Image 1: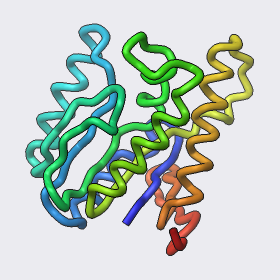
Image 2: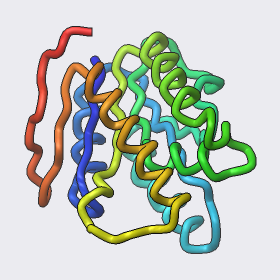
Image 3: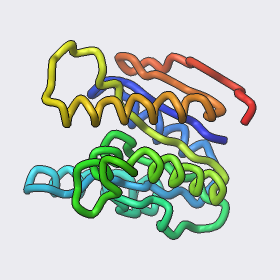
Image 4: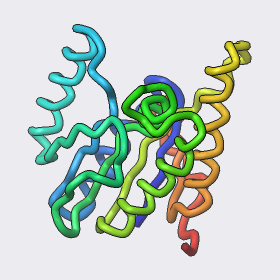
Length: 175
């Protein structure tokens, strides 16, 4: 099963994704893509690891190249989150770069799908603020928008979480 979960900042999408992962097959892997820049990021990562450990998740940090991550057989993987992964692949010197970010991420998702029992990908809705950004940020937003559309096209289920309420956008799509 492939579930794509989207929503705005602090919408409850991560909590919803974790609840869905808890209903799925074990072992459960939390594939964390955030790069730990600064003390605040380190505190958030530590707090999130502690909370997930109580839920039985194995946390694997993988900010770029998710194709290379080792996973337990028949695991449920919760990838948190696509927008961080896209930023890392797009902007980071360790990433694939602007020209290859989309291909690298999409093939990485394909790799995860072929090696997992269930895959849950959390992404962000970053497109409604109406703010004009510089060209590199706009290019990143276009990348994330393309990825969201492509993944929604192959997902078994797409859910948008709005104010903590899951809204099922698509269910039961054939791959």
